[in-house]
Length: 442
Picture 1 (cartoon, one colour):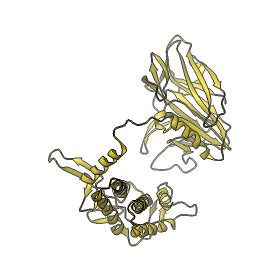
Picture 2 (picture 1 turned 45 degrees about the vertical axis):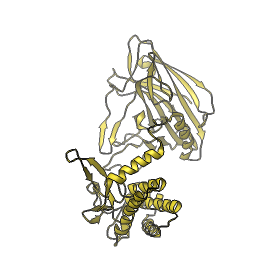
Picture 3 (picture 1 turned 30 degrees about the horizontal axis):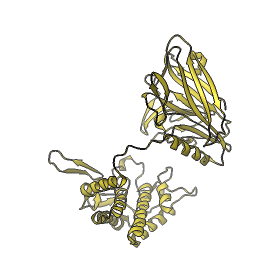
Picture 4 (picture 1 turned 180 degrees about the horizontal axis):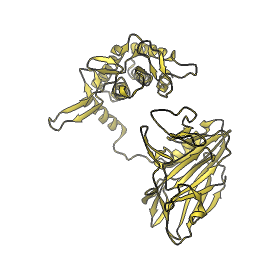
């Protein structure tokens, strides 16, 4: 497992990464031989020295090559496989896709991201029965004037982020001192910025200064991409920090559910408000209703409130939550399709929720329908287990809806994302939102 170490200087007009020595820097690598599996990764201690007489600023890139055949990458929460880079990319909502060559926006053959864009400080790839990858601290701190990697329990002043990379052309995953969000910076799917110049994202090494950091390296056999999971789990427990304790779990659950019970309930609609605002002029409350069966309110509120009420023994809270669930089951169904309408406004059930004008095609949402059935079944399960009450009408409703959704799967076994309001037939399939149907069916 040999590294490729390059750097991009802030003082250079070029965006290219050049050999480390071309930047006036030297690199030394010492490896502690381990197995390279999830529990015992190989540890590489890397030393970078600035031998020039002036400070150096820029981004240092450490890449781990692998034997490339048909790679599937995994930068947790940013890149999975190729992020559907093999699919057509003429889409209204952009996200980073991985394709060989020079494919054009929003695809690229390589990606660099700041560490906090990922859920774990790691970059992995699965190829030809093997997992390759690396893990390193997400940022650097300074302590007693020395720059060093941060680890849980280590104190110091924040200095600079690191970053993680992947390249399908070069066949590498990588780690950076300093960072870039490149070649594009995705703020959200409809706000994408071009690669920014090197400014506040640089790592600085003073003249004669030496920087040391450690990278954990992985190389082990696996039957599929799922073989990455043991390494991720090990990394999670290494870096996870317990959240600050504010109150015990029961108190927190009681406070939150009581606030929703007291302030968010809309008795005339038998529903919960999506947003509750304190009205300073009147001393009362204002509500943003945007009522839906799920996602932004509805069952995603009613079922957790019911679960809290059952555990807290709060009768009034339980009855309120059941009223919301019952209202949706009794009134939301579209008789033409046997699928629930997703939204309610001024006494009318429809699929014209607040998100309607952002859709390409009108119709029933598999996301909201599947998620609603999931939460109905979760509520059914808790009522039966804790109260010994079997709401057979809830079960029948969920089963009927899920049976109809199941029959709309295409020959690739995909659930639709949008279904016709007239017939219930699947209209659009190229989306992940039908996954809630699968969760509810399970």
